[in-house]
Length: 142
Image (cartoon, rainbow, N blue to C red; front, side, top):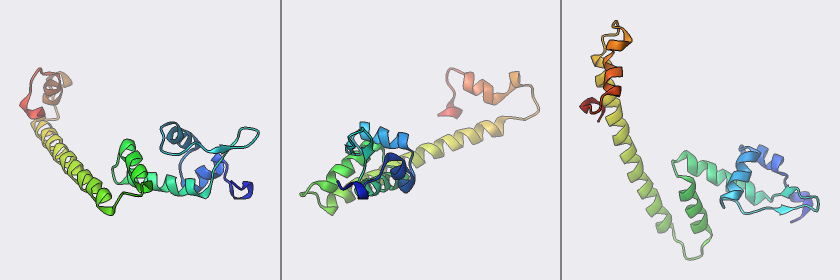
């Protein structure tokens, strides 16, 4: 790597919008390759590290977990991978998102039932929300 075109971890953090600590975390977990180092031990990165970090951030924004992102990064560099392989992962993520939406709707409904049952003017020892949270089994919560 040519030193003039290399980035320190601080410059990489600034260019990519993630902290140096996050960059080191991604390296430890295999999302970013271990960088070259100067003779004094400083990490030096190429421009491709900026692109990789942007890829990771964008994938996270779409709900992909770090392990799913690691798989996408691996697929991106395999010569036998096709767009269909990536599309299949996107469709699977859509299924996961739909499941999360269903779970959140269920939680919202349970919370709305609890909030609707609360008169708001009783002491907390008589609060139906607290009672429901403390109960062994409560259909309003499931």
